[in-house]
Image 1: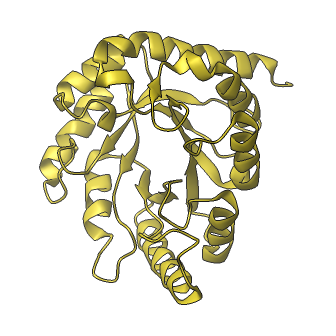
Image 2: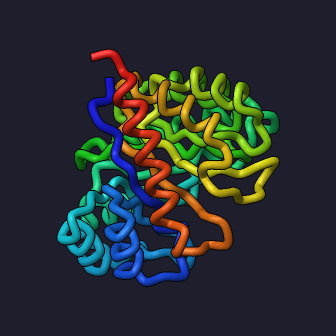
Length: 261
């Protein structure tokens, strides 16, 4: 059972801000953690481990945890996980987020699925040797684009150091999203929290409160979840963060209070 789920922020939410400004915004919003991103235009540049270490130091000095490093490793045969692991060690995080290939489950044949499984096993083993856990992005156009495919992949990789993120599938109604969470629940370590509806239209967080209150009621009983990370806000507006963070903290407090002791 998760003793405490931290309320945090994905730095990609405000990629237009400097790393220091992201830290200041997270502190002002009374958040607990940050996932630092490594994509184009994001805050951690692979290969610049000195800068990554500086970001990690400033994050912790501000009283925040580095929840994870948001990577874009996609299990390609021409890719290596090492630059991400180097950056994770420099920034000081126990978890790196990666992607389950670049082909959706409906289009992936058995050869492609076996290839991704083997690449993930190798990547997890490399990460584990450094004391780092990997976690899969739960996302379309990958082998985690459905809950059943994600679960089958996690079972096939069969590494305790591999977990999964979870976020509501775009366009999924509340009951459908909760059913997906049930399928992958034992592996979920992190929640990406946003309210999009009916597809990718960004709403304020409270506008899908029925979904998220049920998610957190369930999440409070799950064994691995450490962080609920705010990802994206309407119009990328930093002024919305304090209210969105308070909504998130309220849901986390309510779910913790309702949990049997």
